[in-house]
Length: 523
Image (cartoon, rainbow, N blue to C red; front, side, top):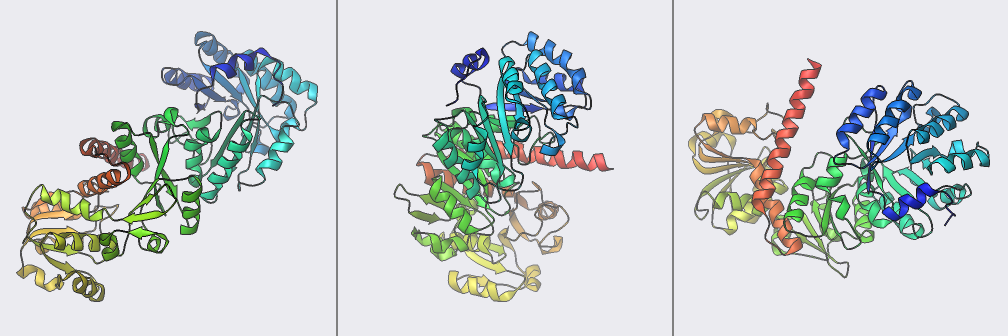
């Protein structure tokens, strides 16, 4: 490891830097420091992005007052040049001058990219390091590649921290980054992570692999890099401060998974039951990429979503009879020997909410759809003695499912003649909007209408059902109950169902509020 001569790092390193550094931007120095003031209670580690300011020098007196008033804060000064994807338009000499002034204003660390450092004289960097700890950084905005060669080039320049940030184009790029950190972090003080939506795992698990810290955004609208997660999310959802070598990794895998509420709900359950685990979103563009990632991280449990629920079956070492019958898997357990076992908890998501309201045996239930969700519902209900009818837009899949499950099919025209105890929507019609419904108001003749869609919280079908006098069961209950069963399979502990429901209800309310807010802005 490089010799570290100056006092800043000798003070910083033994104290162990906080794991999360929040990047702070602003339209001017006043706004930037005001944002920093609002952060100090919960965050002791900040990065001032001076390059985001049109006149960064004007912010330095304000930063100086801030650091003097908050001596416990650790602050990085960054002034990245335009040629390196920053916003500072000055020369390298101007950049050096700005970083020196930032350190004089109380920034204990300064960040300079490799490309600028290579064009500086050694004594210039030495003078900068005499004032503050130097983070030598390198960003690859296209891929994750040549990490060892890049580090070799970087360590030729004396610095206190070496930061390598790449872009994840596959999930496996995160594995590459983490293996690199595990191998090299004993020799150098490294900061390593992958940008982009597929790189989110590295932002959570990189510190487990050896990254000194990771970067976070102040809010979803103030990201300073693609895929950056907010500080609140890293702390409250992912509990990054507790992540260690013994932390078990779980995840939701699909394409896409950006808007999945599973990380919120599952991490809440892990926290409530004191399980040393973290649950992350895995945006898998191919199943091959996902399975390579599962083997090498290693991941203990997976929630499988579209489009992989059926395709994953052939990669499982074993599965329960229910999963075989349904022909789809939404839950994978990775055993200690690396074998993968499949389950389907979608049926639990249907059965448990109904059991709280009716006796399922002999109940007359209509299932809309014939896909994976419908199959789980039909087989689960038949196992409990329900009289099941299937209505699907195309008759062939409905007849096939009815034959296998010993259920009945009906046509749309028959709806007005029949009444049901429950109608279950297992189609995607109405997902993400309040305009569409799989049924018209006059088609609904049932005591209960159960919509498996949970976003939006109240679908058009649910509104129509209420108009017809039916009681509605929201999709949020299905989502929580199937997730609760997954939690029980993975951990062997009872799921904190009430906590999980509360968390997902709040998350959905926030999502609706955010959508309404953005609509109002455009009006």
